[in-house]
Amino acid sequence: MERTLIRDLKGRKDGEEVTAYGWLQESRKLKSVSFLILRDHTGILQVTLKPENIGNMDELATLNRESVLAVRGQLKLNAGARSGVEILATEVKILNRAESPLPLGVIDPVEADFDTRLNNRFIDTRKPDKNLIFRVESSLLWGIRKYIMSQGFVEVHTPKIVAAATEGGADLFRVQYFEKNAFLNQSPQLYKEMLMSGGLNRVFEVGPAFRAEEHNTVRHLNEFTSIDIEMSFADHNDAMSMLENAVRSGIREVIEVNGAELREKGKELQLPEVPFPRITYRECITYLASKGIEAKFGEDFSPDHLREIGKMFKDFYFITEWPSSVRAFYTMPKPGDEEVTNSYDLQYGEKEITSGAQRVHDPEMLEKRFRQKGLDPSAFEFYIRAFRYGMPPHAGWGLGLERLLMILLDLPNIREATLFPRDRTRIVP
Ligand code: AMO
Image (tube, rainbow, N blue to C red; front, side, top):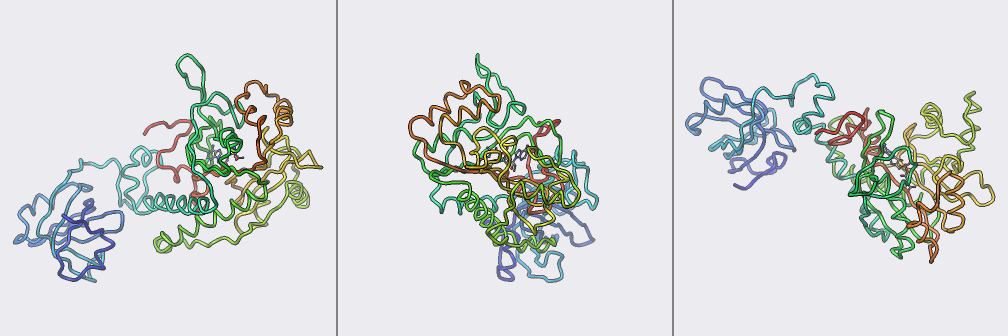
């Protein structure tokens, strides 16, 4: 049977024979007629059952909610029905029966607690507002990809089982790799940089990144999706421009594809203006001091600091020139002012969405930076080697997809933007 999505039924002719598939949301049995509400990911549809057309009326009228049906019948463009359209059924096939009671309701007015929802994510995402989050994520990523690919980037895939830490030793997940110790990668950082020496010129990767974060916060996951780029013969300014345009392109795609549906749910997305405003780390410290808030040079800003700084900006903004002490070994010091670096974070209010920088490309400087950070360069020999035989200057960034999605949709918790979140206590489902 040919399928018409429920949303598309409105575009078909009154009286036409159509087939819709979906879940049984509700059923109502009257004396001589019964009604079903069928739901797919695009909407709901009223199905009218009359005994002269349908043999299994009673069975259908008492069928458990969330059973899966195929409904064939005559389309009625009936403005009176709750969904605006109706099918007068001639055939209803039960494709799969749902058990009862449901572990989670789809249309219950009171939302279940988050753990119950996550334990039953396969039902949770049947709810239109939750389903929409992941369709928005897909559009967002597609818009970002489109821009990045238009700029000559090559999509790459780098290992997730690795021998060395990139973002600091504390947040590593250990894995037993046959007789060796290995780790789950925190970021494709070292590999994307090696590919600059590898002559790929501009690369990007969308993949999982693993962090054994101690914090169990609404902004941290233990496995997140990182969108990474690295570009040759480029500095931090080139990479920032790539970032703001990629974010804008992602949001444009969401507005085009999901904008109407978001608007129905009261969310009006704005396309951000580029370039995004920039403020240096030192300027932030001065600004905080002017508000009577102390922030020590050389330390990361606290969420409270960032909340205060964020008040100066409408939406996205960059904090640039972070001190060397808070940036990883691969970060290029600012020429002439080596206390700070050619680095940046993309922020939205107090939330960090992206870190990036121009990188050190000189192997001697790189070894020095390792030692300054208390790291043994010999553990990174596979990486440093790529710098000894012709490494171009390069820059890049890593963007947390769930963070961006969370910000865009005002979600209160990053887990809402993650299908199957991994956190301190959750590895199932
Ligand atoms: P960083 O460690 O800042 O930088 O990570 C980059 C971006 O990834 C996201 N992110 C997270 N999202 C959810 N849960 C987490 N635990 C988490 N940790 C990080 C954030 C963050 O801005 N190699 C550098 C990037 C680069 O310089 O190219 C890096 O990984 O959105």
